[in-house]
Image 1: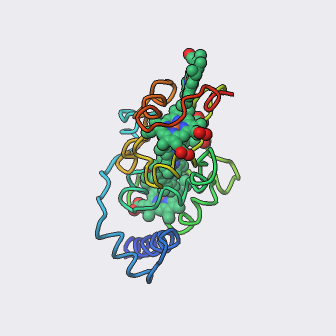
Image 2: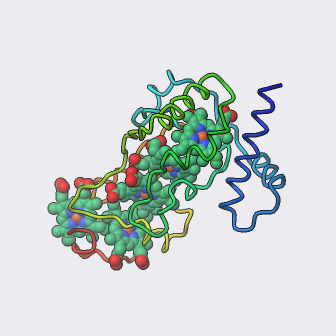
Image 3: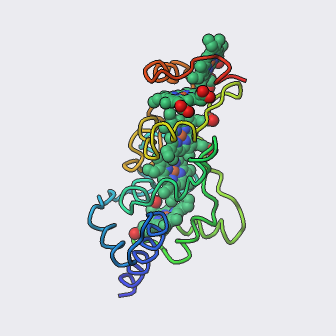
Length: 198
Ligand code: HEC
Ligand code: HEC
Ligand code: HEC
Ligand code: HEC
Ligand code: HEC
């Protein structure tokens, strides 16, 4: 019974959060229905599985397939600066706790990982996420320019289908000029050295 109640709270919170990022939210209930209707349930995994998954192991087993996949939370809800800044931004604990003060997790793995998050919050210790994509200092990559040209949902073009990743990994080697140039050639974008290099 208690579990059911927590589940209901979780759904309500998520629909509120999803409502914020949808341009014209209807009611929380309609939003909740919508979230469930087109959701693909993420597979059940334990922390032990994270070692076998592609990509670096993170300090908390945070799953994009749960958040951006099953619960359809928009990328921009967390990577909020992606449309106006070079860097998409990694969400602060405050963003996480907007939901996780209430959402405690529906199985033992989820509960244990969410506990790590709550402990970090209580101790005011930021989580040290392992960075995956990072180009050398002599080059720069403006996210906002790309999303303006390619549309706000173009993330997958470079990052693959993150909504199905239990752990993020590199789909494309971004530390390779050829990756940039081949698309710039295809789309007739500038290839001047100074556009990308300082
Ligand atoms: C609930 C918040 C949240 C949502 C929603 C979310 N992300 Fe993330 N994202 C994170 C956090 C936290 C990290 C750092 C930990 C990690 O890599 O898993 C991250 C990391 C990433 C990374 C790797 C960053 C690096 O170090 O190179 C990519 C790429 C990414 N997210 C893309 C996306 C895309 C695309 C979406 C939407 C489909 C999305 N994210 C939705 C929170 C979120
Ligand atoms: C909009 C609401 C929302 C936000 C924001 C959010 N979460 Fe979650 N999170 C959920 C829901 C819903 C679940 C699923 C709970 C369940 O059924 O176990 C979940 C599950 C989890 C889990 C267990 C499953 C998994 O992903 O491994 C962890 C850990 C977690 N969240 C961490 C985070 C972190 C870290 C952030 C911030 C970067 C964050 N969450 C932001 C709603 C949210
Ligand atoms: C045209 C290719 C491309 C597209 C489209 C793209 N990215 Fe990236 N992304 C990159 C590259 C390249 C980097 C490394 C940038 C750097 O090191 O400065 C990166 C880095 C990131 C990071 C890590 C940043 C950090 O501070 O740790 C996140 C998170 C991310 N991208 C999320 C997204 C999201 C969300 C979208 C869609 C809204 C998106 N990206 C669209 C190429 C792309
Ligand atoms: C999938 C296609 C694609 C990939 C991959 C890509 N770009 Fe781009 N890039 C574009 C498009 C389209 C534009 C044009 C944006 C505009 O018109 O403002 C652009 C514009 C830019 C600009 C601004 C150009 C200007 O005229 O000021 C820079 C800088 C840039 N890209 C750097 C990079 C770097 C660095 C990489 C590799 C890490 C990269 N891009 C990978 C498609 C891509
Ligand atoms: C569209 C963006 C873009 C353009 C245009 C571009 N580069 Fe690059 N270049 C990159 C990226 C991204 C890297 C890889 C950085 C890294 O190692 O993470 C790179 C790497 C390099 C390297 C270093 C190699 C290394 O091994 O680290 C050299 C040298 C270089 N570029 C020269 C040039 C010259 C000369 C031009 C003009 C003819 C040019 N680049 C145009 C994006 C670009």
